[in-house]
Length: 521
Image 1: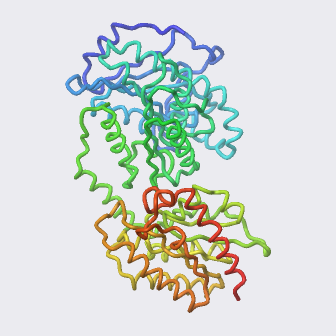
Image 2: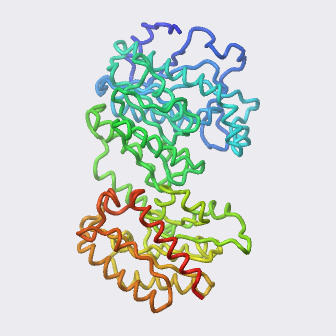
Image 3: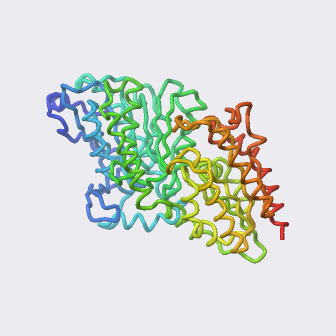
């Protein structure tokens, strides 16, 4: 398909001031596939998303945001906003991203791609009415995803063919997108040719099921993947799958999955760590030579810890982490046995790495990354007692030793675990006390000394307590430790968080302990 060459337009753009923009139609006349589309593009600012959105896009376009020539570095990025292929979140996932890129010397092009026709003036409400049935929504979106992919490929080809006019390197053209825009990003890179394939990509909380294609390109194409574990649409595993495919293809890949941030965080400021995802992207761009310097100074990263501190002060136990999930759990029958695993990132990671183990056994994982025993004790009622389990598996203590919420006091940690046991027993819940996993050092806090012995000493106390209370002690430490009383890479790549192979060692041990607990009177 031919693209109109507008040399005079790009001459004007090349001398434009920073953040000036010009709308560039992607096609001459009506694009193929939209011949019967008679509606016009509209904007909406009063909606449930609380942001400006664009809808009824029938004439795809690029809006160019060019950096000041004094800082321009030759890199360009096409930005695709999200909106479930019904709307485009044009500000926090488009314009705001473009302006940030400009500040780093990168030319940005916000893509308005074709979306499903909205029949009302409140397209967000219209969309939300469809979100309860993703299978039906996917079917409705199917043909439009193909058209949107064409728009994305055309956009890459357009920017590359005009690279000299806007002073960019044709081999430094990236494509990034959010949610549906992330789906579009991956469809473009999977289906691109030399003329229209981006040189690097950044899918942010992408929806994988609607992606067209699945084979990474054979040429080097770095990828930056980002999402949040508590994504309301459950898309964090989709990002992990994309990363795994890139890794398997021996392509440069970086993955960031934040504990909290939900779906659609974009450039919004929520005073949580996801506010800083764009700084990780900046560092990644620098790593690949796509920008000349990292403007985010080390001191600025204190904001991360301030955000963590803010959450600890406003919601120390992270009480809302599983609120929605708990409400979705089915009501138990008298014959059913529910088992709750209460823990930290090791438990949370287990559910992600081997979800079938939990589903087929009616096990419920309630792990939260980074949590210490006082935080678990605080959420004990809602994440354990209210779920009516017959057995509770407590895996706690490693983050206390890591000093995640203050200096480590063995007696304090042990006392918190005792309190959890006593509350469980008072509510007729059988308890399994799991050992702390082997650990030689903490990658995030290497200043903590004598880690292996601290783990062993606390495990000895937990084992003795379990025996005295006629409880089951679940020993992960002995079969998983190496010669240093840590965990080797086959068990835990970072020495702390088990690999799938590590979880496969844990699974039969946990099942045996649970069966033993059920037999106790």
